[in-house]
Image (cartoon, one colour):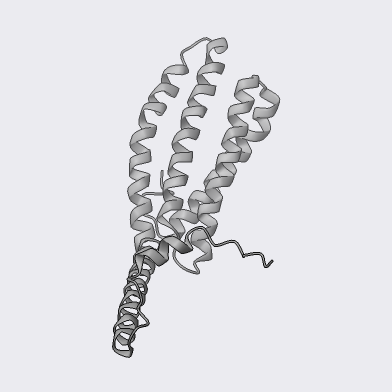
Length: 191
């Protein structure tokens, strides 16, 4: 007794979508194949439309677009960072014991803003084949790693760790800002 092969679960569904094909007459067969051809053409056109819309959505920006969108994001970040600068200035007058937790919260807030910026700039995309732009975006990830180390040193109240990680963060940030400005940004990378 021959065993039947299992049917693909959706094959029956797709077959019910097609009009019934008749094998009664040659005339009927030609029109059936015409319907099948039109159905195949419809699927091909829909597939092509989908591919074109997806590729347009993921098209890489030009260098000018990358700079323009990046600078717009940097303007937003500057506005978001302004209250943190005021809080940091106010914290200077606090007793030293209260400065540690305030500094940790300030760095945590800065990291949230920085991470959101990095995510949004990454979503803009980088110009095709532009290694400098790709390096700038990956540098933002390195900056986040270093900022988290600084926040951790404040959380541990470790002056020894801060003496190492804070200068490393500052050196890296200054170098990245110089590269960003040299790339052509008008807002990003400028103090």
